[in-house]
Length: 198
Image 1 (cartoon, helix red, strand yellow):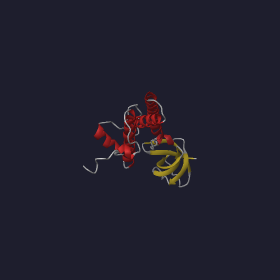
Image 2 (tube, rainbow, N blue to C red):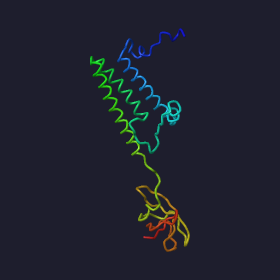
Image 3 (cartoon, rainbow, N blue to C red):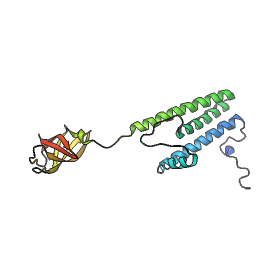
Image 4 (cartoon, rainbow, N blue to C red):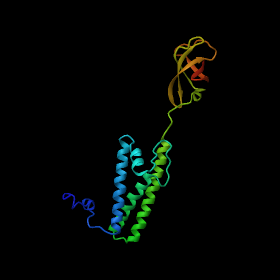
């Protein structure tokens, strides 16, 4: 134990000799900052932050596609603690009183919690479902990619939602449509487009 007897993390960070309310602010900033860095480090190496924080703290952490911000999420609490401590310390070091430091810390923590929530809401809205409903192709025009045989199937390339896609297709009247012919999608049957030559 002799090696760690004189170890003081606050001295290491340049905050040696603090006491009272400054100690509260410093501890809040330190704990919030460490958890923030740890959380995002674990998130970057494969999303294991959800499992770790669920197991250690019993806190539900939802970062999935349907995650919506609630004021008391783990991310919001981390942001509040970190900014509460930082703003409080800054106010105290700027010769502000203890009550002003608490108000400034609470205000900064609340604002950071709010904007953390808005940031996560933005992430949720940016996520897209990459699937396309086949019915969205009706009315699209394109070309035959592989010849549609008489009464049989072929493949066509059409633009759906701004993206060129290739689908299995059959002729509306059962007639053959050659490779490279221009077509229009008129219907769908299961996973097959029904097309006509234009």
